Structure formats: C-alpha cells, structure tokens
Amino acid sequence: MKLAIGPLLYYWPRATVMDFYEAVAAGPADVVYLGEAVCSRRHELRAADWLQVAGRLRDAGKEVVLSSMALIESGSDVAALRRLAAQEAFAVEANDMGAVGLLHGRPFVAGPHLNIYNAATLLLLHGLGARRWVMPLEMGQAGLEELQSTRPEGMETEVFALGRMPLAFSARCFTARQRNLPKDDCRFSCIEHPDGLDMTTRDGKPFLVLNGIQTQSASVCNLAAEFEALRTAGADVLRISPQSRHAMEVVALFDDLRRGRATPEAASRSLLPLLPGPACDGYWHGRPGLEWQAGSAA
Image 1 (cartoon, rainbow, N blue to C red):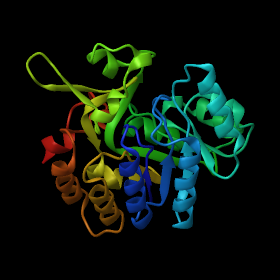
Image 2 (tube, helix red, strand yellow):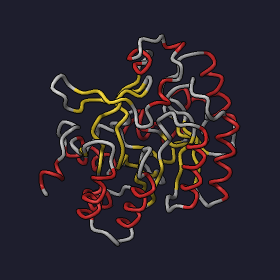
Image 3 (cartoon, one colour):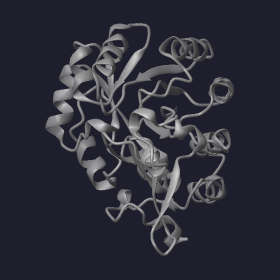
Image 4 (cartoon, helix red, strand yellow):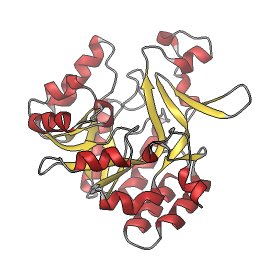
C-alpha cells in the first residue's frame, strides 16, 4: 500500500514550505500532491516554485501530482487552471469538473471534492481518463466496499486516512471575516494560523476550523486502526494531510504500519499525541463524523 502526502491546505511561510518538502523528499511517502488547492490569494509560492519543488521530489523518487483548486472563483483562477492542465510534466488531481474537462482525456487523479458516491460516476470519470479516485471524506467503509466491487479495471483507490477533513468551501473568507476584514483585503491572515483557526461551541468544545474559504473539521480523521479493513477493501493509497507539527513522525508511523512494524491499534494510539486536535473516525463507521469509535473500542 502506498503512502501519499496530500496538498498543503494551509498558508505557511515560503521557507517553512521549502523545509517541509525537503523532509518529504527524504521520507518514506510514495506520492506527493503539490500546489495551492484552497485560495488563489496565497502567493508565498508561485506556479514556477511549485514546479521546482515537484522536480526536486521527482528526482527523489516520488510520484508527484499537482492539485487543482476545488472552488474556482474568478477569471484569473480559470487562467491558472488552464495553465495547470496544459503542462504535461506532472499528473493533475482534478478537484472540480472544469479541471476534468480541461485535461482532455489525459490520465488524472479524481480528487475527493469530485464527490464520487456511486459506480456510475466512477465509471464516467474512468472513461474521461481518471486512473485513481479519492474516496469522499464523508464516505465510510460500507460505501467504499460497494464501489470497490464495481471499480473499473486499472483504477486505483485512495483514502484520506489522516488529517483535518476539508468539509466545505465558500465564496466568503471566514478567516478574514473573523478579523473584520474584507476578503479582497484579507492581509493574508491565514499565515498566522498554520493549522487553521479553531472554532469552539459556546460551551468551549472544539467544533470547526476556519482555513480561509475552507471549513475543516476540528477533529482529526485517524483511520490507522482501520488499516486491515482498508487493505481488505483494496485501498491502494493512504493519504496523510500535512499539519504544521509532527507531520514526518505521522508519516513514519504509517510507514511502520504498512510494513508490519506496528499493529493498527498501537499506531493509532501513538498518533493521538501528534495530532492538532481530538481524533475522529465517525464517517468511516457510518456515524457522525466527529465521533471516535476506535477510541471507544479501546
């Protein structure tokens, strides 16, 4: 089973990003998704910089995929998407149907925001060139097993196994709004929140995380304890969404897990103190997403 580093969802300083991907190049991940996937106002790295990082990672033996944004909002976003689709040096993860159309049947990864919930959609995207699909965040074990039974030949399956779940996108920027700033003058507020901006309920419980135009779960999806079920279901790739601290320790724990150097239960427990929030796996079990069933079983 391959390990993938998902696209960086937060706005980190340029030097931090470069240092992070140098560590990734030396680490055990097989696949690395790159590029700005959330907000086009983030410019610490430009398109040319991402291509430079992509080349460095490919030289280190990684499969590199460039991710498109899930929400296209302007003409400049469309132009950037066209440039992304036009380059042929690296594969593309399509996160909206506009990207699928621009890829003109070339092999691509059908990202989690395409919302593939049934066999007909999976077959359609396969016919359009998808060679791998990423299971939607809200889909559980039962849905995965059903789609795997009808998966087209040659199509790989990737599952979001660890990270705060990107649940929604909005034309509004809630991080800017929290500072009473308009979106067009956000002053790049996201850069002050390397793991997003925590929201709590009125009684102080973790609820959601604001990440610019993206809303994430406050709880952190952790499917390490479900490793055997994922393997039995035929998952080919496990995605780890990078966080600002302990990211490479998390990747190392998943590497131990796939190589049999750690049991799923032990790896799941070891991950808990490395996460930026409470763990959850509710969607996997067909329950509310913020629930932590593995924790209850322990």
